[in-house]
Image (cartoon, rainbow, N blue to C red; front, side, top):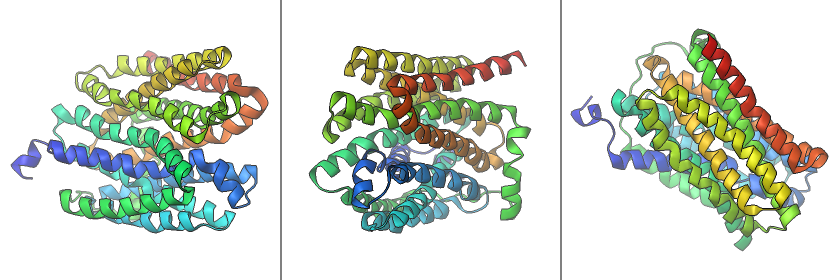
Length: 391
């Protein structure tokens, strides 16, 4: 390894990797505020509309299991570029979709191929010295959350002035440019593992049993992201029906949540200084408090309180994510991609569950039911936190 890489990636490379994470992960969320427009145009039922988001997240979780572990087996730069390139035809087909079955199929493929972001984050950890790893990984992960949060307003604004199909076409063009840029900017990294692919996959399922820290972080982050998905899937629907928001109004509201992503480098700094456990507790408490504020905002008919809840929620989820990644990346470097795959697959399975239950909860229990279910998630995480502390 060169002397420059021994000092860690440059600020320019870190910025590129953070931006790449945001642009790639946004592909999973563009459809979320648009299902109410896509469904009627493709003659989809209400149940099928909801599957667009769920299948995208399930495809992403499948990519975590079947593609991300390849980072421990294949040269990392080539793997990242190939995976980003695979997103391009899936996005083009989404823009061209003319039947419900086609839209649902390409939604799963978009999720599957968007896991390149989870190849970039372990690569960042490999390139960064231990003393700086938390801050650098936090910065790159901050790009991921910015992508999640900004994807909704971007999709809403483009659709308000043009068409939902243009969202997918523009993203395909961005992915083409990004694949070319990453092929030139990323350093090569050959992993040391020499296992076969089958053995690589078989080892995944033993990792949570083998590493208690990984098991703990899976529980905390799955709980946090289930709450995150409940809020950000339910809030646009609630704002449309209760407050009469348009796509532009929802776009502005979603921008507020992006402020929470600013906590990513702070969380990484806390982890580098050994404050992971204390910060984990307060991250879970922030998610719990956010749903209390969200419930109050619905009761008081206050958009300001709802926006505040979104900021606090996103800050708590982002902090928990960075702390979790920092904790598992220091365990065993040669297993880093596999650990990240298991961790993030569990994370997004929690998110898919939250998205799937939001609609029925809003219909049968209203916004208060969504907030109650959301508050239950961090409470489960805190219960596990207390049990782990006693051990």
